[in-house]
Image (cartoon, rainbow, N blue to C red; front, side, top):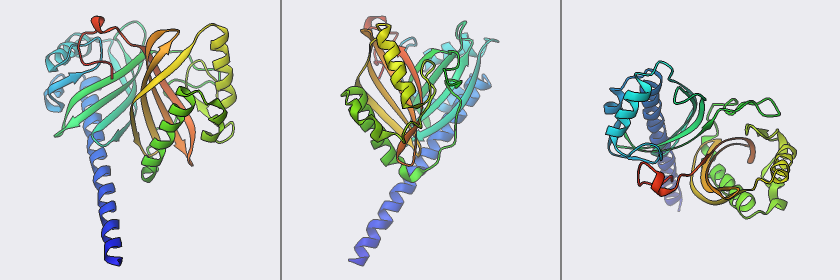
Amino acid sequence: MKLLTLAAAAALSLGIASGSSLAADTKDIVTSAMTELMIRKDAGSIDRHFSEPYIQHNQSVPTGLNALKGLADQAITNNPAFNYRMVRVFADGKFGIAHGIYEGFGKTPLVAFDVFRVENGKIVEHWDNLSPLAPNNPSGRSQTDGPTDVVDLDKTGANKKLVKEFVETVLIAGEFDKLSAYFNGNNYIQHNSNIADGLSGLQEGLQALAKAGVTMRIAKVHKVFGEGNLVLVMSEGDISGEPTAFYDLFRVENEKIAEHWDVISPILAAEKSANTNGKF
């Protein structure tokens, strides 16, 4: 029995170690790719860090590396106004997530979550959500400031489960009577540009939307990615009937949701999309 127990423990430890190693490799690849292409404006980095078949989910960009190279040529490498600031990066296995700000794609800077899938050392798939940079919220917080360190790696699974359960139970099922179970009292740091800190700020923000005749509904969770204390939920729903993509990043501390960032963006109709891969 002791041998079986030791073997099981060894296997579990190996699994955790290999998972952590994969996430570390993914994070390195994504960080290098974004640094070289978006910050240093090195178009040659596309061949070094990306590979076909490259599946694109940004609805404004055709799929494939040729389209990515065309975008880089037109809007990044030869655009003096282009700038990218990477704020935080984390990874879940073969998926890497970058949270940052783009300037130069238009008149207004864009806050973005970029999600990449890595296979055999190269990026082969990309999802994102972008929205215009907004003024600081009523608590004086920006859409990207706050902690960037990834900690509590041993709690990744539990934190992903907690956040997914919160989204499905409270935000989708509407069981707001269970809201307090997911937070440490009123201690909740908010980065949504329209909402103040605390559960009280969240409730006031939702009431203000309702008073303005704005309805917001999350209908389905598509993906949940997490590393340690950071968990990203990609979901869809609508705002006042308009199809909408919600990317919500949560920081978990001591088994409670402690902080929240988001990027909310419209979903284009299929016939208006530059590719057929879907938003999610």
